[in-house]
Length: 130
Image (cartoon, rainbow, N blue to C red):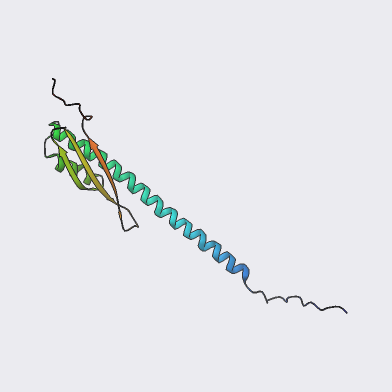
């Protein structure tokens, strides 16, 4: 006694290959979008760091009298030229240093990148001779 095993006819495919390819394409698109968002965040973080460094240096120059103006105002102007805004500025007149925290927008994401920088002479460099 032999068993009869039916063979599939043409046009009776179930579409498993189509569903598999659709899943693979959606997975690839998801990975590409995630990579784009991650790279945007990294670039914004680097931009915030650069803006913080430049703002702190310019503000420290103003604090030491090498440049005219209020140190925090000068720092804010330099940060604005670098697409960032100063969130916190604290000049330390005794030490001759300026600490600046800036925020820069991150394209496509709801939060901002932030960075902090300090500029001025090394700690203890302005001691009075004793």
